Length: 253
Image (tube, rainbow, N blue to C red):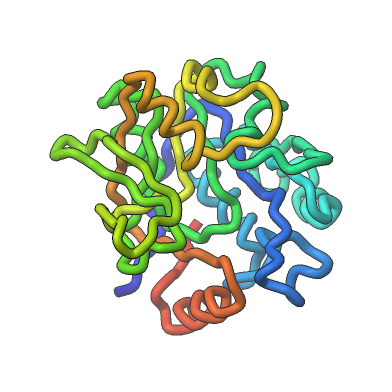
């Protein structure tokens, strides 16, 4: 089935962090000179698809974290003006992880904010995600994608009200309790930063989200009906390109 992004504009006045620091070693030789999010899909870098997705929903204040070949990202996007957004950069001399990446910009996160994993390709309805987040009054709302093979993913347990009850990163075959996985798009409240260690490496799935649950904080799951493509390997990359050639994914920013 062909899917496309919603065309109607939305205006969400918030900051978004796109994670783009990873090297993508499993995609070599394609990533010898560029970070994984800068690989091209459907005529533009994966990272640009994510920037355009945010812009479609009126989210203009974007931070991109950098580590591996940062110049490739900066030279392509510069200040973001050509895409109608404001882009700033957070360079990490040492990788800080998906959650640790928040620390360099922690002081600026004073209201609801978004985090996107910049190496995924998605048609997630940011508007629906944020509307659920607001209704549920959760500390964090995580976009979830139903996946058959979950052994390389972070799986999520949910109750009947879409409240998250449990996380497990990369389960063994006998540990699978759910086929809903973290899709790498999160809405968070500033007080969720209290679960992010102030220094060093930390990860949402392994560290921060389980810690929020342990503290009794409410976490919600947005069950995606939109598409999501992981691009973790050369095989994933070619499969995604084939899906686009077959008309499965059609970005309409």
